[in-house]
Image 1 (cartoon, one colour):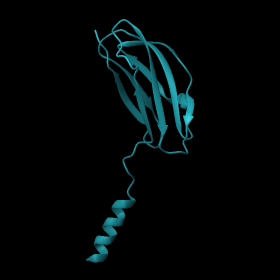
Image 2 (image 1 turned 30 degrees about the horizontal axis):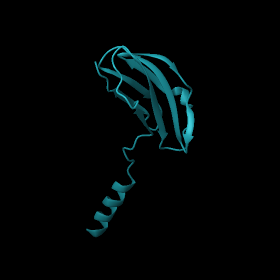
Image 3 (image 1 turned 90 degrees about the vertical axis):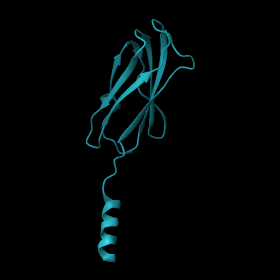
Image 4 (image 1 turned 180 degrees about the vertical axis):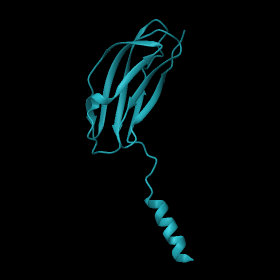
Length: 118
């Protein structure tokens, strides 16, 4: 019985985890932007699997309730950490950036909401 229990525990530990292959966050400006104004948003991307073979250009960003006026290219800011800066115009109170990246290690699909004021 001990052997079967040990095998089950070891098998569970060896199963792939549900950890994402990458993580992304949106750092909002210090002041909450008002609707119909322009602001700068910084997106930070962290590769949790350090041997990613996909270029950063495979990260797709779509604006909802805002217009992307310009964006920088991805810049490395630390070990496996990159950031991109977006200049946006807030068109609606309910707005977000949808981010998608497809890969064999799970990829990512996120909706990053932006807090606004009227």
